[in-house]
Length: 213
Image 1: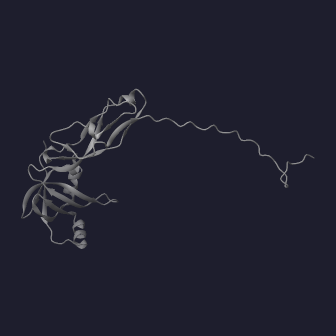
Image 2 (image 1 turned 90 degrees about the vertical axis):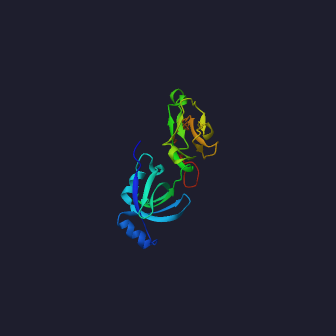
């Protein structure tokens, strides 16, 4: 198991646009830490270090230690984040303090496993409707992904959230009837026969058939 990541942070006083703009120019990212029975604290940390966590395999579900100068260290997880849509840069993050034994809601990806019978034997196509699912669990039990075997699916059959195997450490926070994936048959539409073009009828200026000489 990899060592837990530790990020050093400092409390910040300014909360205006000028202050946040200055921090970003200095290569830092403003954040707010809340939850865990404590008051919200505005902090700042090195952007490169915080962004590196988001690039790990567990991404925003990574539990890491935030060491705030003058306050101390504690485990946190991303609750929300703001990304620049053009530059892809992290602009702001909300971090949630973690308390031992407390369950939190996170979103994890869904991985489909196996080639469905309806694809292999009937020429169907596997269509995945739900790619992420919300789960409630303790931070230590956050899964990297939810795995669903779809080998048994025939053409016209589907799998829903209610079909996902249960786990005593995990509670699914999605409607049971939500469609996850289905095997569908795609039939090419019959093309309408093209009518042969006929030569246009020539009419005289009066609207009748052209007279022969």
